[in-house]
Length: 586
Image 1: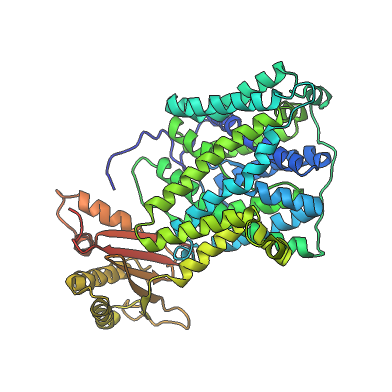
Image 2 (image 1 turned 60 degrees about the vertical axis):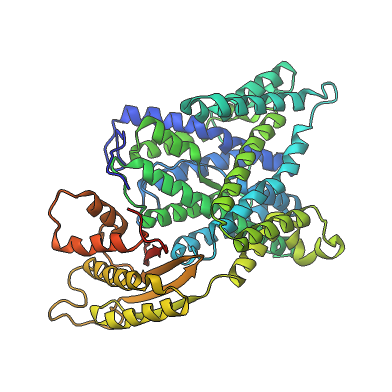
């Protein structure tokens, strides 16, 4: 961690002048609106449900506006407290098309709401998921996403009127060429606008060739609500429901990792001085996304997720004040009531839209591949990813006994993302390194037992060379956690623990490759103590300041461990120490 300050004009809690907030909010909406409008259009057109299209787009804009306000305003444990505008989720394209095809808007609404409730539930359990939802697992599933969506998009690109058979592919080709060209050669700011510029260029070519739907724009009202109604829910729970539910839950899991990444990136760009990630804010981000998607499902549209352009815009402008996010949400809500403005976007040829999304999916594939390559240091993790990826492809295209698996469990295994993800999860769980576990009260009296536990672990795993560092670091971590307790807790003079008030420590030790890993899990204290990871880094920077007594253990911890990571959740805090055989750097 560095002590350098970033060029941030307004931090999240700063008050920003309202004209500036409105201007930046409008800019943020202009970056996100294409996805908010066009992705539902892709889904409903691909499923042949165009009679519900205008209502679905209206509902999508409303849901994204509500989510942007909720993320920025933060109500209790819901909302990031940062500028995180939402856009419709690419992850759900294939499964939403299938849901509409097999059960109509009612089945789609049911599955979207259930997957959103699943997201809200997961937001409170992020601390329990980091072992099984590894970067290799999620990277593999992200790589499979384009495999499931690409056939739909390629079919849309090939669509053209009989009198202009090349119009669709040509306009799509212009869109792809412009986006890729800007992405490869443009400046940072220009790359931010690459999808918008590419779509405009493709739409102009489409208009020249006569495939831009001018009539749709002309017929749309200036102000109003499109015809339509809430779809209701399909409560028959037939084979289509049970076959698609796992796919929707998997898409929600992948969306969770994307949301976590956006929430972390948003935090890192929002403050002048770098600080460790506050995972409580990450949990609030996921919870707000789930609440927004409940609204999207009830309204009859596809789910949304925090969008990358909103994070990139904060970096470019240097404004991370929450007022910008609220202004963007209000702008979305106002835009939903302007059908003619939305029609201008909806009239864009389907090939142009499909081409733009195809480029985004290529980037998704690269993101997934990077996660796998960077986090697969050995044969085990690489083999898990390879087997899961090719299994997903085989089942997506019915290459494995389709007469048996195509209809199994309502088509559960017909989705390559679901099948590959299940294989990756099962292989990861079955081959996960064994861990030793020790449970005790968070109290200094447990120190002798902790030392004995660490000695035994080092002896059994052949880590005698790092035993002294493990033992010393465990002691310093325990002292640091005790120091962060709120006043009036166990250990204070005259304090008596009521039933259930004792904070429990769970210490886990495992060997990963040639590294030893100690993980301390403690029920979160009801306080806002500074993140231990920040404290360790900042203590190391203040070399000219005489050390305070409470800093000594942090300096020692920084010396013993190769890395220190402190994750603070709403219901738990986790401190992870890694020890390389060569010792800590520096």
